[in-house]
Length: 553
Image 1 (cartoon, rainbow, N blue to C red):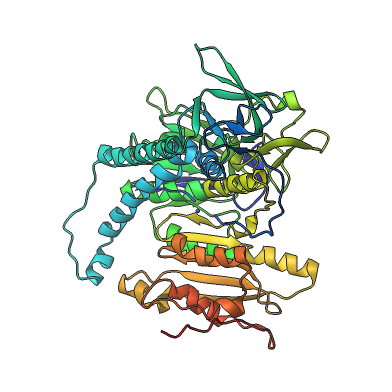
Image 2 (cartoon, one colour):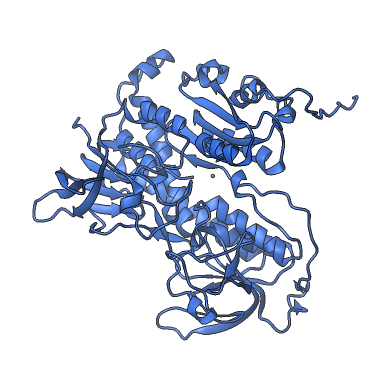
């Protein structure tokens, strides 16, 4: 098997014009890495409790006519039918709002059609292939596997069929609840007015008491990179799995790059990590996910130019020194996956009609997702959620923001706590996180004058992980010993993406360490990793805790 080459590139120089800085936006550090075979995936919500403040709201009457909506066609119109728009639409119907959703492409958006959903199908395959090819692992379980192979088209069909099924489920759920699905490109033409239509058909104009922008994002391609969709491509193309190149370079070391490195290296074809991740977790991830695999990588360089293969010549990747900008070398590979993150899809929305100016493409919003105009004022009855506002570019974050907006529209003030929203990278093993990294927590502590304590537990001490011979991994808790406040939790290990939610819920609900350490976890389960983690935390003496007394049977 041919060795792989990887080039680590820092985000600051390549990603000009995409997302703002943050834990989960564009893939920070960019790495070009050569690979030989594996599969990828995508990231995971929580809402902070806020005391409800009653606000006036127009509701739809039971016979379908809009009650008290001032003659508007709808109480709510959502532009974009991705995961965020879908979540907002369903909650709006539950609240009795007459709702329409406008979609110019297909229901489900990036996550369902070109992101989270099909990538999970590929990752499921790559995980199984990796396990079957691990002879030592198989023997330790007493299993013998003579050979393991895969059918590329069958794998691609599995991903496409899953996306189709989920897309159908989303569409049917909205139709069943009475959401009007309007086909076309939506444009805001004035206060509470939207025009939509598609090529070859006349445009239509509707009015709405409230409008939510949920148009999502598209792959971000840095300058100097030429995309042909075949030999130089983005994640949108890669998920079709039209080929598995022998020698591939991945540009980008965030969620997308890491997951695709997992796909390609498992299927026969990655890189350094991972801006926004806790440094200790990133270091361990490199040891577990990168070093043991056939991956060659370069650090301290940028990919200044990438040219697709043509006329029998390979893909050419020109690398320059990150500091001096001098040419260092040129890589020749069969294909290059550009995984440098996502950029907001906000062009053509008609924001100029309501005095709104985007910031690097993102729609400016306040903490309640209300759109801000060029003068810094709130635009009445207009909201923006998901990737288009750049606060946290995750599908479940978009859904949570949409639900939060509907709560406000329905008369209950609500502010989403973004620090309680978990994120996950579906590599093998998985990585997940919620809240602050250790450096972020210590910076906050220095500014606000409190102490930070860190405790860790290992998967090697967990019975369920050992039973599956999957002991690689740790869980890390960052907290305040004076109050017991949970500041962050980070996990690398078996099913980390599922385990993180106990921590995210604790942060969202304000649960303290001294309370959650009394929660009971089934034995033997992976959840005991977090059980041990919370029990290891020590808080200042004298802090009270509440333990509910059991009710006598």
